[in-house]
Image 1 (cartoon, helix red, strand yellow):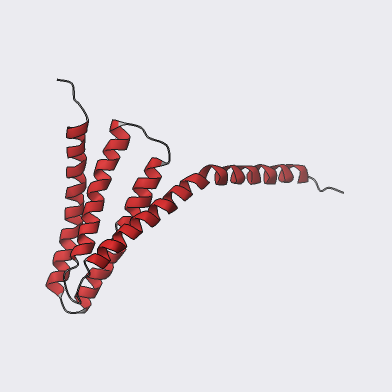
Image 2: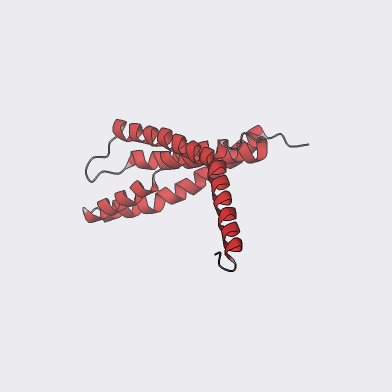
Length: 156
């Protein structure tokens, strides 16, 4: 014998299950694009770190280069795909979140600051701590402005 209101709760459960299933189907390509892009970006970063290793107590130039160049690329990309042309719906997750998210490494930046400070290189750690975010912001803004100025024709 059904309990009062069970038809409503069964209907609600079916509705919720249907919504979840639909959300998973719609988001699966986005998750896949981010994963593929992230793998590509992380491999590129790893290659740079292998080619230009940081000696113990040395300044982490490779990590700074990766983060600053990744921010510059992000600035140019965002202008290109939001102001210049509209690409496929997976382009931004693939390139922005995936490739550039996997390429940049602010967690390594934080670890480098901590390692430098723990090894007694406080001045080097402080310079790195202050210059990296400033350079990242400046290069993002500069790349966006240059991309906008070079690629988007303004009416005279």
